[in-house]
Length: 341
Image (cartoon, rainbow, N blue to C red; front, side, top):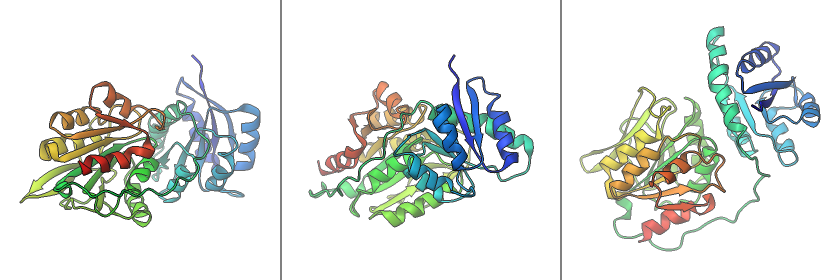
């Protein structure tokens, strides 16, 4: 079995040691080098050609974000960012990082070791399967021209994503106008980051974007993003759609879970819904999207060519849940065409 060659870039010698010792316990991972800053990292990359790099964002001499921006257009390497609670991580994803993990804030060594051996190791293995493309060229801004069908404003759009999803969701909702029906989103992400992500999108998009709170109404022109540690379900209260946001056990390996959201949309909105499943590892959302389709909803899946990880959309397509398979660039257009019918 060919091992995944990993370069660890981390300026804290203590955390560097923890990363090396605990990632090395995974039989699929081989640490081929450590670097305390991007300059050392560059030398390792040239000599040893790692399959995956873990990267701290806060480093002396040159920060991880600046390093990514310089590195990725020239030598694309699947990168998992390790970060404290900072919205810089979304710039890192835009610069080409595959995924990120939140750096443990506590001092409990056993918890930190467990986090590295489980969560970080899993992300490294996922990253090793990704073909990192050269940075995309800027696409022209999209405008939909046709008017929506009568009653379209009463519909609900549900979107689910995981690895690669922060950029994929942006690509979709940045093309939504204020006439778009209410949108509910699950993106697998740690607590704290979902609020920063929602605020970031709110500043970049024409629609209102916010982290969902229990009891929020689902209204046209607004996108609600599930909090990083709560399941989000669609409910109907007095003729209006609202969201219920509650902590709970992981479903399909996640909290929030795309399956939980999609299943609630199937039960509550039925044929008045559109389901969209985007890039991500695993199968969360496949069963829920099929339930939506069976309830009369229209369903869209991202295609393999445009997915960072063709896992969740693939499982949904395989089980017959996807009615329209689209390149990421075309998904917003497809949603509008479905609303214009």
